[in-house]
Image (cartoon, rainbow, N blue to C red):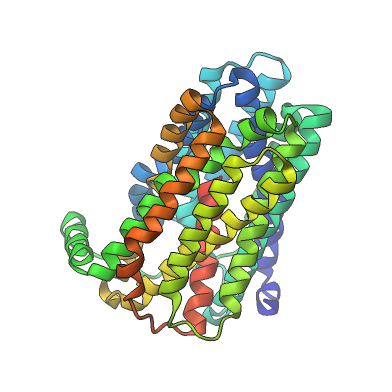
Length: 421
């Protein structure tokens, strides 16, 4: 990763990002805790997860077009300013004790829309800051490391802030963190855009890619599997505050430990895949990761102690990372080059676009039967999902090399971070 730090633009950008992402993770955890403290309702946790994530399903295509048409640098500066305003409003409402649930839902949806444009634009903006395209992999490595590290640090700090100073301090800290990234962005110098948006009918091109995807059995099966995981497996994260408060009788620090354990498992999963020399058996590891996630969810659903829950949550993080990164890699090796971008957009939408619906469904079920039973049920369904897809997925022979695996892991870490935020 050393070559990325020799680039002045990347030095500024990553320094600002490190501060800002810690604030983002602090706000995300504090907001979940605040909603559950106010409502004591798992259903409302699901609603909050839905409103913050569902905008990506509808606004991401528009964001991609704007990122190709407009100045990406300016788009990101605008999104950071809007994010600062959102965090400041949250801080003001909570600090004065005037917060209401509908206000939190509206602000959650607002940041979801902002993130749809911000995160989509960032995927291309990274290239705009490079002196040499050879720095890209190094830059992706640094970006992934920052995402991972802040995902560990942010929730832990949020737990301390909420426990000793209240949720408003987390929102204030997040608002202040945007100042750092905005200042850094103002000093970044990007290359002028030379490529023009390709012509042609966008609807026709998307239909062509969709038909291609549905006719390719391996790609279709992997995308369907990711969609099921987005609905069934991943929404356990939105129920974390209920576990921390009702099951373990803890506080925000307890929630920070649970979130950090999940992130730690993802890190171990990424390192495990990146260290493997043989990549032809990735399809087997996809099924193994799915089954392992289901097992972790079952144990987590049964657990009544932190001693048992922390390892089980780490196992879930490990399993989901193996599945996401492995599926990304296999699809990348199978898809035709001229359809790669469109097919990979289906992959992202299948995973991230289904998570909001899974979140609100899990929240509704948890309100009826309890959070432990809900997570237990999702674990059993995830394990059954692995059995259903096992034969078809394991027949896929991946010819990916170590470079493709590493790049897919970096992409998957970013996607998991975006999904959680």
